[in-house]
Image (tube, rainbow, N blue to C red; front, side, top):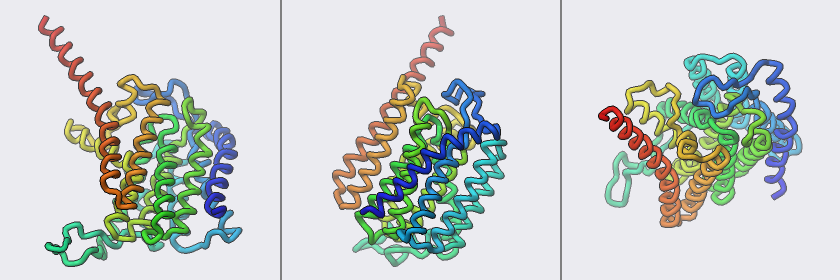
Amino acid sequence: MTKFILPAVFGAAVSFLSTPIVKKLAYKLGAIDVPKDDRRVHKKPIPRLGGLAIFLGFLISILALLKINLLEINKEIVGMLVGASIMVVMGLIDDIKPLSARVKLLVQIIAAVVIIGFGIKIEYITNFLKSDTISFLGNETIKLSILSIPITIFWVVGITNTVNLIDGLDGLAAGISAIAALTLAYVAYAKPELSNSHNTMILTLALAGSCIGFLPFNFNPAKIFMGDTGSLFLGYILAAISINGFIKGATALAMVVPVFALGLPIFDTTFAILRRAFNGRPIMQADKGHLHHILLSIGMGQKRAVLTLYMISSFLGVSAALLLKQKYVNSAIMLVITAAMVAVPINQTWMQKHKASNNEELKIKN
């Protein structure tokens, strides 16, 4: 058990100790987030680059475990570290001098292709249409062949950006990523047949520890932001680990686990895309309709909003664990509770806007 505690301890210690150094570096490089629009909830300039401390915590933890033979190097781990390094370098540049969306997308695709080259890709999907009475496409799993490349790229780029988009409140992305990583670690421990259990546990615990070590500086009121350096790294590495540890398993359960673990950012991003498309706005145009903005709009403070979102993410993680144990009713109950926690503030916001709209109409008529 000690070998699974060490990654988290190493990651947390390095991240915690390196954050003040990274903060000074951010000031020297001019990587400062200045609140220049109403989407930002902070009122004064705050340094970015905090994600570099998270990355260092993860990287040094992995290298230390390799050194003391608690982790064996393989091509998949090398691929993840190479791809993650590409994302971190891009994030650093973007935090100092913002890059265009096209450039960032191109680099994300390149980083996704890197792990594919090292053997991390979605090779099979479950045939959900196969049953005892109906068989469509024949087998329980469908080999993707050449389609594995675009599907893997879509997953990696998609998850990378979901974490990036949810990074809107102090401590939110770091906490949600830690919860997702711990969920994946638990599932790898409880169902080793679903995953490359040992490596998945080491990687996810190192990642969770690195996020937790950063949180004392990032939780409200934040002294430093993770910036794109952190959010892009976290999204990328979670996507890569989930493929290597779970989705390769090709069973329906294996595919559901990372979707549940990352359920909050996936939902928030999907809802944002649909909302913008429905309103006839560019889907990449930023707005104040994210779930954390909605919680703030109904009167929650930053801390309460973030803790509420932590709870929602944790409930999704518990749902994944219950599914794992085939406790489908309990899992469904947890999902209903989670859905209610999301639906209530959205409904309250809609009611407030509807009421305000009606009041405006009455004023015009009068």
